[in-house]
Length: 505
Image (cartoon, rainbow, N blue to C red; front, side):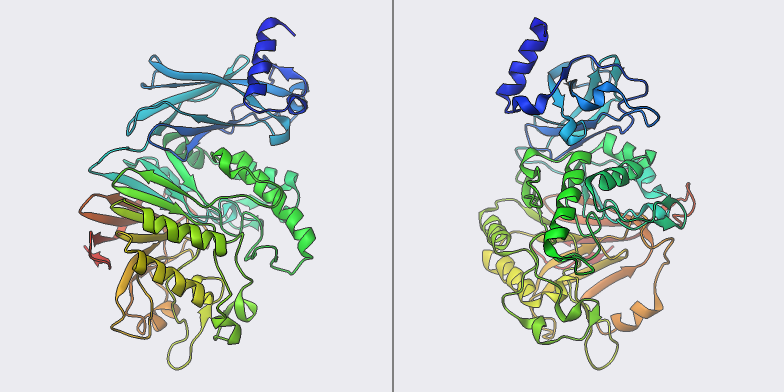
């Protein structure tokens, strides 16, 4: 090892990388294909820093020596797109144990400004990514989009092509980044479900082969959380969809969680330890906004009444049942009470608003949603109200349709006050082309005055937050079966500061 390599290795040890992880350290590997084919990404911005991500991709036609070694990857971040004014730089190590993914937590940046970044490894260089830090002091505007549910088989990521052209500071992703199922609808995915680390890695590689998804990652920082399909449909804690032995399912969950971390710009606090990973966290945008990122899968009780859409059963109202787990519930209540932000935005996976889907007498609820965790939902509503947290707004994915709803403690009492607003966004592709409405849903929405809007097209939600209001534009594409389908704003709603409940513009 020459002097430079020796110093590099000493630096990696100082950063906490054990010697056994470094393996055969290779500062200048030789590549037979583009090692940066997966692109670049950034995530979890703060006022002074951001996570930069990339991943070295092997040549699919041949195995090379570097794939078994620890690789040096240089990074730079600049204040201009031409990368002439570099303000931070360094060298990271890409470990074979993490399939050569790179997560660099850059600090020492200025608040509320754009930066550009790039990676280099050997003679190969990545594309230039763009990211933005959060404000530390007062700011007059935050623009972000939120999205979820991007099933590769069901269509093209046309929505991302349009999102890339938006004037945004941030993208928030609310779950179902991949799907464990496969088949052919518009695009083809292997039918066999991934259950091993290699299987999940391959599924992410396929999803990230989409250029529109890679471009939105390149252009904006992301804040992400997961839902169920990153592991297994409707899983609850250690319970799988098909009731596999918990010990076996937790092995699968561990593989899924590691692949999730490897492929996404997650901070080091989210590194999984076997089948466990701490994803719930806060991200501050100064006095204007605070994002509270929830994890509604890892700690939840099993779905009540046998899952599905069911009438309430005795289990439905059990006090002990939880969506978030005791520790996360306590964390969230404390965050509400300590928050000094003007807007408090909950990044949430499944619909929080109970909607009775049985027209006429009787009740039926989707047990996988918050409606199936009624006592936990009531505890959350009480926490919002009792803490007097300022302007809570919930943004949600999961159900492949657009909704705007009033969040209340008691939906059977018309005089029950509105506690917060829930904006539910549709899917990027999941469910296929969709439609403007659904006769089946419209039939029971007549009995749900707390639902302000419903739409069944595909797309994303674009939000603008100011001290005076939070505005949500429901952006929809005509078809996901067509690569260049146009986008339009189907509806716009606004929540005024200090006035819970959304109004349509």
